[in-house]
Length: 229
Image 1 (cartoon, rainbow, N blue to C red):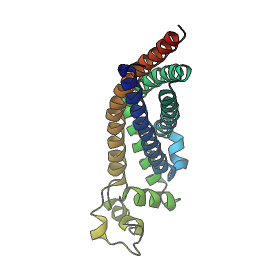
Image 2 (image 1 turned 180 degrees about the horizontal axis):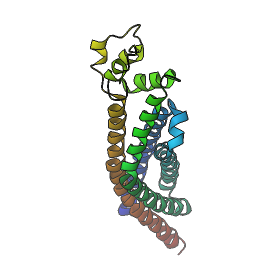
Image 3 (image 1 turned 180 degrees about the vertical axis):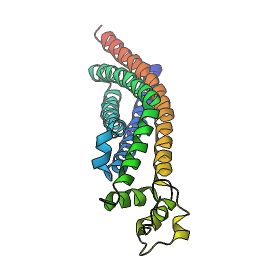
């Protein structure tokens, strides 16, 4: 293999090491998103709000597996493995673009689901206070729109408004916390932005990796062909 082929081989190997790391980070990020919803699972499932986080988690696992395959194909100079990797990367590239478009178009609808989730939890907080407490502890918030939701209804402010370690919670401390609708919405809005911009960056690198993988497979095939003569 000539110098160009060796260069492509090691660049592709380094790319895939980075992709392995990206896959792990996406898995962690997707797990965090799913865990944030799992605290309110009974309500969240009603509005199908787990869909995007689960897709992200699955995508992270797929990226990790394909990247590992690419590392093996590049370092071993295996034509079959490298071409298989190229096909998988192309499919992953297209799937990732589809995910970005899904997040872009369904983002407002998804955020609307989140608003409904918080509203539903608040409506039922007298019957099932544990779900509201979990929401307030997870997102460091108080009430649906603020601590005044409790005082307006002449209800005591729960300890969860002041944190997990609080044994009591007064109005002054509770007023410092945002409403859970705002906190929940802000969290998901920021998460959706991260998904879109990170998705574009990773998709661009995947396209480069696909081109390099095709070049490497062609170089290895030519090297084998020349060695047979």
